[in-house]
Length: 247
Image 1 (cartoon, helix red, strand yellow):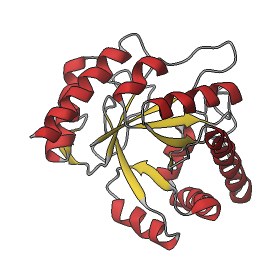
Image 2 (cartoon, one colour; image 1 turned 180 degrees about the vertical axis):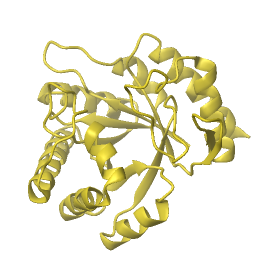
Image 3 (cartoon, helix red, strand yellow; image 1 turned 90 degrees about the horizontal axis):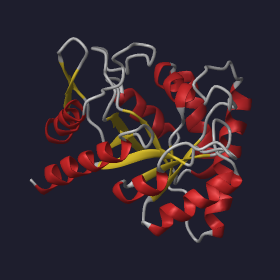
Image 4 (cartoon, one colour; image 1 turned 45 degrees about the horizontal axis):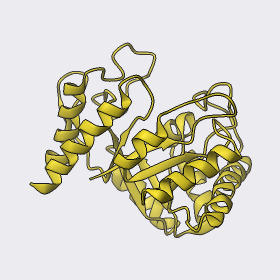
């Protein structure tokens, strides 16, 4: 099981995340491309940091929403959405080239990510955008109950998928993330996070908000690099995953 983290989300004088402390403990860095966060210098520094630690680099494109951190939904026509995604991936590809590395995968951010996993017309537009630019790029998507339908759509565009689960988010019985506005949407205790990661790694299941057991077949687990206890949480998750892989 791989660990991925959203990174490079600082912007100008605004600091976000603990990238230097988190990077040594993850396998995949989802690097912001300037539309919900980041700027060219931040992108360059984050790419260099990932390369230093041998971390796989992914583009983290979003709706053009700096003020809302990409978490506000937008009604964007398919042609414009494709161009927005390709623009952002292309920017990161260019920066990676200057550091002697490359973009391996794409993981959409925030509202775009949530929308594409509930509206497969948007998901298909995202797949078209990635495939047209470079069909060797892997698309990271949420591990949802409709995984076979998602796989079939990806085959249409000759794309490889990585399915993602979340270490610290509460799931509904329908296999979706509970809304962030819900008070218990994000797990606050290390023990609860460790339990969820252990379940995912060992059984391919997790416990939903009602206490039900939900099958979640994931290739990678998302960890978060911001917050007062982020470094400790990621270290603990890394230990759980390493122990699970060893067994």
